[in-house]
Length: 121
Length: 189
Image 1 (tube, rainbow over the protein chains, first blue to last red):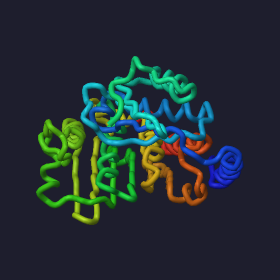
Image 2: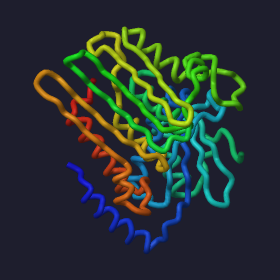
Image 3: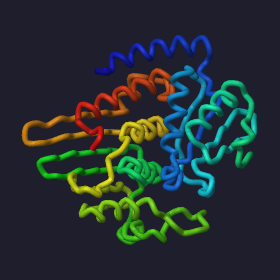
């Protein structure tokens, strides 16, 4: 059974980690979680991002959910927001595409242009 | 939507968009009463009687910017419950919040499955670190009662400034929910 004592250990480890690296968030991922996004598989997209972050130990990435943004025909939709760079919106996402975006864009810094449906605001 | 937990995810998003600071989710699998009950309670903006009525209309949305005036989340959930003889109730008070109670008859052959409750809860909790989630799962039959509580406030207090998206924290929450869902017989409902 998981207990709060386990969290204490995680906190100690995380604090060490942050001392070494600083606690900055480098990339923010925003998954569109409106009704049509959910119906098209946004929950699996969110889950895959979380799995990949945990598996690759990405400590400088933040994932959040938001409502619909008027791109219903391209759901599930995901925004990648990086400090000092133009916002990139990926559309028609699925777990396989998420894995590719994590490797290419988040780890290696190359936008996966095949999946991009919009840039900027 | 293919399952109840996808509807639940949609309803939680409504609560968050209504600026809820705390969302309480209860799933009660009551074999004795042949009833699967979902309760979502938030302390968001709430709705007046007129808006509450309109929220169940598919051609109504609270989103001003939307060109096509549709809002299918609540109507679809209601329809899926009522189609199998279940019920859908919403109560709200402006300034205090909204409570939604949805009942499904457990043994109806056309009832949607509960689905992946874990991923719904995991996504909502981590995707909205500014919101406190209080999860309560309850299983009841003639012989026993099993329950699981999960409160993100306690976790956040323990973590201090460590974000919920920290890799080990994601795994911790995922594992906790997994155990809770198993211990209350909520998988394959």
